[in-house]
Length: 199
Image 1 (cartoon, rainbow, N blue to C red):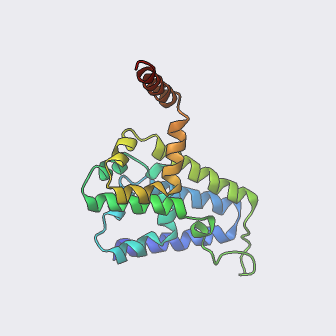
Image 2 (cartoon, rainbow, N blue to C red):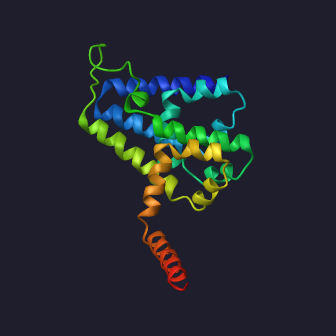
Image 3 (cartoon, one colour):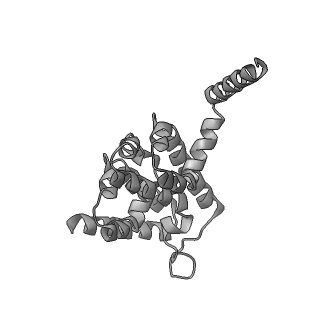
């Protein structure tokens, strides 16, 4: 209960900073998010909550959504959980879905905006920052050692689910553009052609 209350208070503070819209409050907001997302294994700990109801309530808080979408929260724990039991694998799928589906309004609160007595308004720079932060997080996931192998061992059902997320689609696109991957594919094609023409 105390941890939940603390996260709720941090979310309240974060939402207030969002609505103020000044550079000073934006700096406070970024500092809070960076500090929380940097807590070792915080995402893993939250994802391993047994109760689906409690997990949904915690991940609906703005501080957790912002922390999940921060590159500091990404780490080897993702690959470890994918290589773990089915429960852990399912939680990682939920994580991938969350960081893929989260929108700008989810992070700042859809009820925040002009007309509510505060000065915050969504600007293009806010949208650009959100896009940059999400791209950095997707890059961090894609660069995890062993992530491709860990995804390959998932069941067909889980693999189909995770393959539809933006995070994994970004990962695959990045890997396919990698020179080492392209060379490997080209080499395999050459072997195929060699086998075909040898008969």
